[in-house]
Length: 255
Image 1: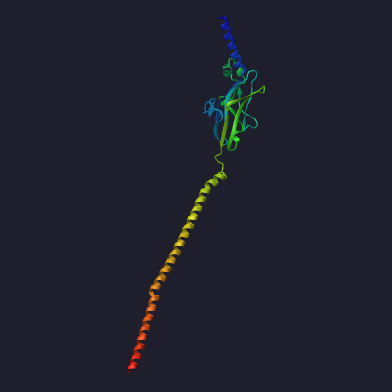
Image 2: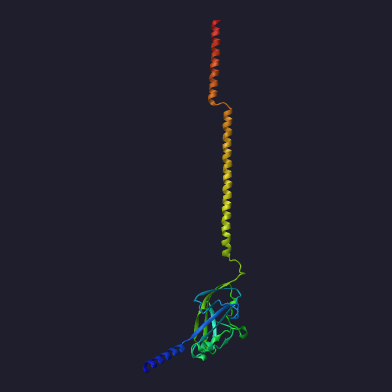
């Protein structure tokens, strides 16, 4: 029985040592334009998945609050990067978080572990400096805890895509062209249709003119003498003349 009890105690101590030897950290909340944990609604907290998207307007500010514990050292600063660029130090209050230390069995672990205060009168939350100056676009953000011994921890929910919208941005050339192109195509089609209609009208007028001319010619032809009638008249005249000649000849012979 004593051996079993000793093994259990050793196991508990081993687990405690493992916990105390490993870092623990939490980005509790992120707020937009609200530097008061009690008054604002967090955009996301510890449950936010990696790679979450956050959309803000140009000029908006981001504030965070949380804690970070690394046994053997203390928190130095919270930094973040934009598109994996240079570190930007977050401005605001750093404080003790004995509650966080106590959760790991030692209140002293929480000394200097907190960043950001709940009450703005106590300094407020940490601001991600420079976010409000970003132009419209999409940026990859990564927030890290940096300790005084040089070690670092990357917050799991501090990795997200930031989409900055500029309400006053002019329309891009591509958007303008996209809006103009259908109108141009419509205009071209309209012009083509107008040309086609004009050509059709022209052709119709020409056809009408041709038909009118042919009708006029036919009418004129019907109003004159056909070639067969002329031949008949000539033959009849010849017969009449011949008859007269024969009559004259016979009258002379009688005399």
